[in-house]
Amino acid sequence: MRRTIQEWETTFNSISDMVFIQDNDFYILRANRSFAAFLHITPEECIGRKCHQLLHNLNNSHASCPCQQVQQTKKPTTVEFYEPHLGRYLEITASPIFNDNGDITGSVHIMKDITERKQKQQ
Image (cartoon, rainbow, N blue to C red):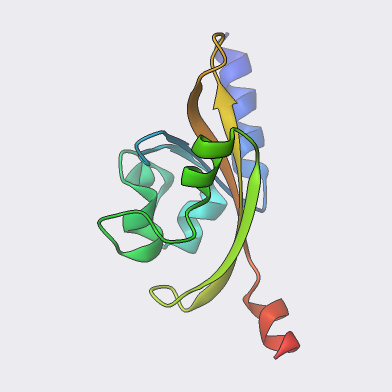
């Protein structure tokens, strides 16, 4: 079991895209190294914090919050937006996590910094 957990952690942290898992109340449960490095903190410092606090410096969810959309539709969703707090354009795909009863218990978020692409389009 320990080996399986270690392999999962290694794989999770090897992903170059920024990935985090959060519960339905927006609290981050896990964050990979890429996500934490983007925010200039450690993965451990992400855990227990709300995503909108880290990404938007807000006390409430963002207007384009993919987590809210996932909770409403129970389907994956992708959003793009400019985040002035970070000075970056971001693309976030959120996918629901279901329990055995079919209830959403959280979501997996894959985030990409698309600033360079957006600037070329302008």
